[in-house]
Amino acid sequence: MLENRWARPNLIILGCWNKNPVQAGAEAETFIRKLNKHSCITPCCPLMAAFYKLKSGEEKDYIRILQDKLSSSFGDILNVDGIMDVDFRDLVRYKEGSDEAAAFWLSKVPRINMVDFEDGEKRDGFLLRVFLLADWRENRPQEKKELQQFQLRHKYLFMALDPALKDEMGKIAAKIDPDQISYGKKLAEMTKSSFSRGKKANAFLHIWGYFTGEKVMEKRDKFLKLIERYQKGSCSIALVRKKVQCFLKEEKIPYLEKQSFLHPYPPELVESEEMPC
Image (cartoon, rainbow, N blue to C red):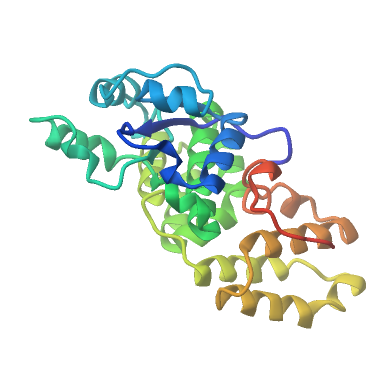
């Protein structure tokens, strides 16, 4: 979404520390505190609640919390948008006899180990998914036009996730009487797809095709080299997004300005990096 218009993801911190909570890493700890400003985080452990200055959790009873919060809300989209692990073990074994139920719920939403927040690419993939699901949950389209607008503003995010599913969802949204339940199920399936640098780079190249202004076109070769660097892992996606945002300041393209892929979550959550225009 554009700045100040992001939905607030509902997130769960799963598990409970029996050791020093600093094991998650200082960068991850700082990030969680930033994320808490833009989301609703429920920790399953009072220790984590105190450490991250979150609302109090309930010790280890994460299965009950999951069952309360992960009730189906619409089109197989759930009331929780993402799960963050704090333990290095398989957390479905935390409670004897509940493995099957836990595994079912855990498979329904994006999930990340908190230590992976120190990996810019994994962090971006998680945030793209949870802010997308939050947008669907909070701003659920009620009319055909609203569904089509949802499809349009997330077009390049969908392309970076699963181009084939993007086309299927587009066909549903284009029908005279679109089936929103089917669309929601496709969206849930979409968030299980994996991002890759290659698919994200492809989305950026499609976005580049909209620019025709002389000033921006002069920077074509440098931008293509930047995309190549990103694909090879030598620069972050934040840097590529920033460059496109700079192009949009030179050449106004309203359609691109509304694309969630270019403004996927609050700037505060972008990894720290020098990103001048």
